[in-house]
Each structure stands twice: as structure tokens, then as C-alpha cells.
Length: 477
Image (tube, rainbow, N blue to C red; front, side):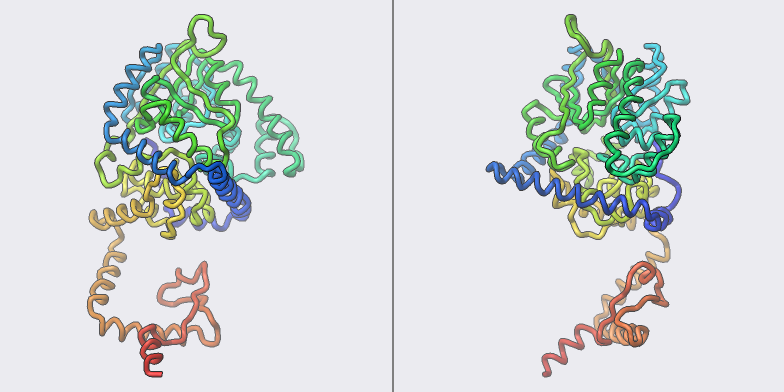
């Protein structure tokens, strides 16, 4: 398992909010995500379909799997092996890398094309492959861009959402060996065609394809892969070896359950009725087949997931990786994905990163929230994300992980709140002090006792009296 970035969350936040290009890219992208989902949900109602009922069904399917996860995994393993696939198990990122490299060496692999896989990001697989002399090539356009930039994805659905056209052009010119050109949005099709031409050579020459899986279907031993680019099919059908790396929680019992979840996933992720490519990958190439791998390997990964079963955070295992929570999160679209320091950004990352990398390694992420519950209200499988973040905060306090100064201040506040008369007296003094500090202005720009409160915002000033004082005066009047 790769750890979260050592740079503190607050330091990353300061860096990202001052990045003008990043802010422009994020503000341009957010309304597209939100608007497309809203239209897709509204269209369901026009077709006499109940989106909230679908969410209930999706939640039930995911809970049913988690209640008997070991049983469904055994069924999947049995059915997958019956189709000719090899099934391996990995406890952590190190074992993922070891197993992929072992498969590659057994089959003489020098190059591996990859479709988007968050598990491979968890394992830092690309670095391990390169160190073993195997070239990894990301083929999802967004993943290809961030690989050229030497960066991690900024979003699980749109990995390069943080990049401007000019930045992408600079990367393409450098990698493709041509002069840099001025570009606008009208040039996007030409830039995409350029990337396609470069990647085509890799598709034709790679000996191994590596993908994740949106779902694993127990009854058929299949992997379901949902993409909007043709790269997923090229990676899974052209190379002689196909390796699927996915978490143990991605199981669904039946194809009917998969169909239900597919009514939720694309609408929540990209606002589509159905994704451009939905592939059900079962076993290896059989006699008479014109395409497909001669070797299929499933690597089913724990990496901290099993420990969440039966815990207060089990609900997080329902996640279907649609990205809706971050698409609607005001914090994410103020910072971008890299501020979160690991693979998963946004509200889902504020829960998953502490759980999978260790709470002590991501102390600020459970607090990276306004508490507005936009994430919880749009989650297609009803994960109570704000509630889980609150539980993680409680756990930090129980384990003494919060800074001593903070704990002392909270303790002092609790002591004061338990003495109403003293609290009201001090609140009245504070209201008068703030009114005096503002002078002739309606807001405070510099707050002496806690300057961080006004570094990035204006603090509105009241009339110099507390609510209780104003209410009492109104009653007397």
C-alpha cells in the first residue's frame, strides 16, 4: 500500500487555492458534472422510473453482498476458474505488484497497456512494473495525460480534470516529438486523434493488458468493465494476457443485480443513460473465438477492506466508485484531487484514505468537509459520508490523535458550555469586542485572536449584542 503524501493537508490546500490554472479548470468542470447528473435523473422520472427506488435497490444489493462476502467470493472464484481464468488473492499493494510482475515474467511481457484501475494506483503498480523492466502505458486519455505529467489522477472519473488545454498541449508536444502549438477548445478532437494514433501502436505491441473491474459477477465468474473510450476493449482483447485487479468488495451476486447497478452508475458518474462501452469479460479465448486473451488472471485485493466488515465504517464498502460525491462537493471543487494526498479524493477519500492508510496518516481529511451533505444526498447507494467522517473524528479524539492545543481548547469550551451564566457573560463581552474591532466596517478582515478565520474570508459583524440580549430587548418592547 502506498501511503498518503507526507506534505500536510493544510500545506497542500494553500498550494492548490493559489493555483490560478487549477481553479479555472475546476470551476469550468463542476457545472458540467452536476448538470448532467441532474438531467439524467430527471429523464428517469419522465420514463416513469423511480430513481430513489433504484437507490434503495442498489443499497440492498451492496448490503446483501457484504453480509456474506466470503460466500460470494468463493462462488466467484469457483465460476471464474471453471471458465479457464486464474484467481489470485493479494493482501496489500506489495503483493499486487509481486503477482503482476510474476505473471508478466511467466509470459515474457515487456510492455503492459492499462485501462483505468484505482487498485493499481493504490499499489503504485506503474512504478513497480517500470522497476522490473516492464513498460506500463496508460491508455485512458485522462490517465495517459497524467502519466505523461508524472502525476496521480485528480479525479476517479476524469483523471486530468485539473489540466488546461495549454498544459496538455505542452505534454503532447514533448512526448510526441513535435513543436508546441497554440491550442483552443476547437483543437480538442485533433489532440485526441493524435493521442489515439500514438496509443494504437502500444495496443498492437503490448503482451499484457491490465484493468480494474467495476463489478465482479459471482454467478458467471465475469468481470464487468464500464468505460467511455474504446481503450478498455483494446486492452482486454488484443494482448495475450489480461490481468484484472480489483477489490474484494466489488462482487455482485447476479447479472440481474449488475443490471440494476448499471442504472445507477453511469447516471451518477457522467450523467449518461448507459456508458459507451459495457464489457462482460468471462474466461479466456476459446476455440473459434476471433479475439480475447489466452491467459486471464483475476487478482482479488484486500488492502484493508476486510477489516471494515462489521465495523462502524462498513457502509463505505458499498461504494461503486461513481465519483458523484466529489462532483457535488464544494471542498473538492475548491482544491482538486491532489490536495487529498492519496488515490481517492473528495468525500469518499476523506473516509477511505484514513481507513486504508491509517487514521494517523490522514488526520485532516475527515475534517475536509462543510457538513452540507451534498455527497450523501447524491450517493447512488446511500453511503452516509458525513456521518462516517464524524465517526472518524470521534475516533481521532478517542485515540488522542488530535493536537494537544486543540484538545485543550475543546476541553475549555466544554467546561464553559456547562456553565450557562458564565458562557452568556463572556459571549456578551465577545460580541462587543468584535463590534469594536470592526470599527466602521461591516466585516472583520484581520482577527487578532484567531487570524486564520479571516485570512480567506470576511467575518460579518453583528450589532454588538448577543442573541439572548436582542431577544430579551424585543420581549420588553
